[in-house]
Image (cartoon, rainbow, N blue to C red):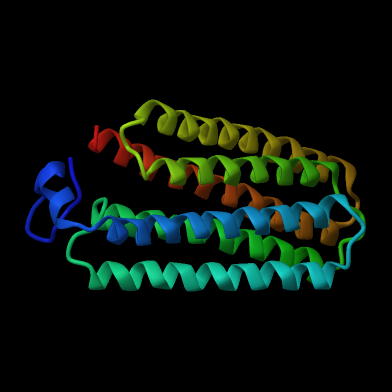
Length: 223
């Protein structure tokens, strides 16, 4: 199926004559910029959990990146309202950027909690979570870039499959992390703090899978 209009969906060959390449490129450029911001935020969060860094300063850096992502999200939604013909289905585009923004929001929430809770002893599973999250957002970025050329559907779906695999790994990590947290810790406040952070990290990985599901659906629809 080809790019959509409000009253129907003409075939791709017809739309390619109506829609300037730059019109499609604007949407894809914005999506890729958002994916880049998310990868940057995930890397900053991973540093908070693996290195000796100034937690407040690092959380502020993540917040700045998250704000940039919000601006990109608003730009995409604004263009959706202003553009008659979109490169992929309008609803799919809206779901895609919304789920991408959810990932970035959850990364920012995680970094803020690590700073506000003054967590000096980092749980080993948290580092593993961050590594899985970084790999997930990288795979999402690869999938987002694949939207420019839907002819290579095999490669695009392979990136989505990798995101799904990492989501399963995140589920296993959450079970292991929570089990060890409740087994080893005698401080209930420590447990509450880390349980919230684990949930945010796992939810961020889940939202990566949501992004991949939207992209996979687009790939199948346009096959």
